[in-house]
Length: 373
Image (tube, rainbow, N blue to C red; front, side):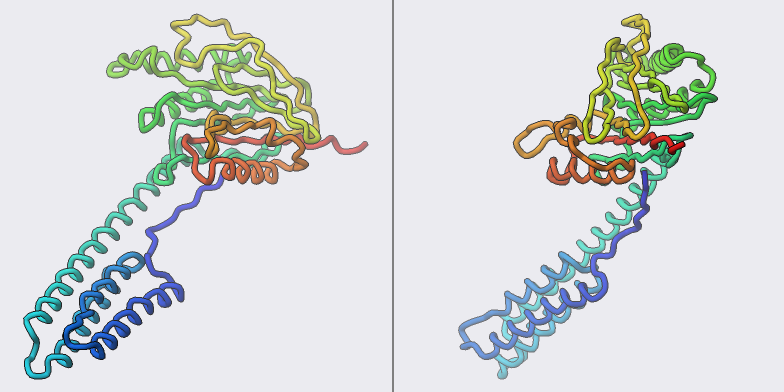
């Protein structure tokens, strides 16, 4: 998962910005010439206000101020040329004052807009930094597995949410968790950070997958019973899938806690893994008293294992239809994790028209084919 830090964006950039500035300048020249050549009872000077107004849509306060000053100067020249007997008529004086006031207001608006843009850029930078701490990118390799992962935020201004994932190595394979916290905002981020911390600590120590999931459930429950958090007990939970993927082939072990099941893709044929023993979401164990049973499924060399959150399967197109995951990826020939993820992301964003309503996590694990003997 790649993260980019973007600083404040300047409104006018390079040659394109200079070309756009020519538009209001040409407008001022055209209006001034036509107004001077028009009969004395026709006044086109009020049209000059369009020049600084248009400039404010793409330029900063300095450029807007210059265009506004040029418009005021042009209106003054028009008045001097057309009213040669007087310095300026009352009508032209009113137009000059109006242009001046509008120009000042537009400059103030641009200053406030740039200040807001800088604050927003800083907020985005802080959120991206927090995401790197809470959700560091998965390594490109986990033992023999090749990994590609992506976090898609629904809101461009908030690059972090309640979706989560983490992986850790054990002596025999890789343990991985992917989940989704109920709710949004900093409360969801706090719950996600708590679960990820518990997973990273316990994944090495818990002998069985069932014991690990039980510990994770108790960790979430303990947090919800802390002072100040008891009001959320029974209402806050985390859907998750925890997997144990052996290095030397064999079947993948899985405990699904209310989370969408994984999909294995082999030669373009997707297979959704059946959850025979579903468990309640983490955080509800004290209410449901579950016994965690482990399901398993094959993950052969040359196959891809796809993990995701419900931000993918619940993404809607313009008609309101959900994203049909298995149907869409059927027949895809990509066997490389990065290539598959790139196509997956592009297809999902095309389905939703470029905007997601919920955060989404995509993880693709590739088990390379065994080398020929």
